[in-house]
Length: 371
Image (cartoon, rainbow, N blue to C red; front, side):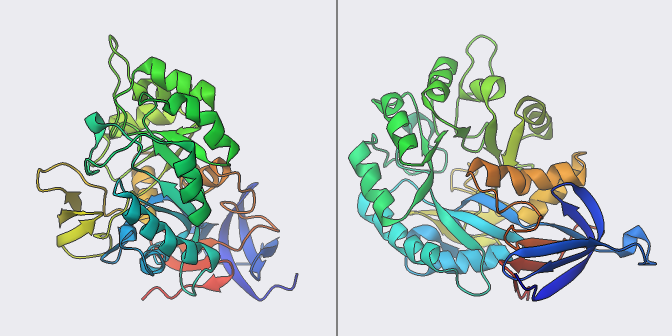
């Protein structure tokens, strides 16, 4: 491999911090130490693995459920905040609307447009959820069937699927979904602790926006969140400090070894206050918060660089925080060539200043314009 470019700084490699140069084309070719740079630590940029967001509904004023080329617009908006790979995420909707969204995502998955994050596949968040824990999802839920999932999976590859394990035959369906290469996540669920444990034993791998849209932590009547805290290896969490109290985030960090972060970003991300689409519903962004007319939280306006800063503000070391926005979501999807800085991995990189503000982004060797 002939390196086409390089960056200098403090590099968070798979083996720890190295001060020096990283050489890359589409993939990382080499990392070399530099002991001659006279600058102090505060003057040297930080180079981290690019962020991987497994729960993205929208951004830049558009929603993935609108279909067409909206996924490309969303992927471009998030790349400017350091996201180098993502899953396009659907909403609960009528079957034809979900198909339209997946057809649009299929094009973005097949070909990464210049200036965008890589769209790795689909997170099918609805419609296989509980009417009792809809959150911001509309009341269009249905029970899953293997034929329906196969049909959708053939349109665009489903990498993650959220379901409520207590509904109908969902428990029995989990092994077949896993056999398709889909990570089954528990979420938007009114299930019990026992339902959560049984689903994990059947092959479920994670939990969708932990604590939100699920039964909680009650010492008499433990729910899905308790099953996650007691048994999960992986779970996603929205660290915007609005969806989950910092104390609950710290609890999850101690309990779940590979807790990773997502944005649950909506069309309002990167946009001024106002009204935006979230599937068939309208949401309102005000003071950084996205809500339905009822006042309920409805996704977020979070970006992954802000997620990283929030984790560090909670007291996490930067390398630990980086793992939770890069390495752990990559590992969850079984990707050993993303989410880490090492020779042979994709050249997905984010360059930060001392305040953890994005200075440069590289996706598969392409330097992304940030303006």
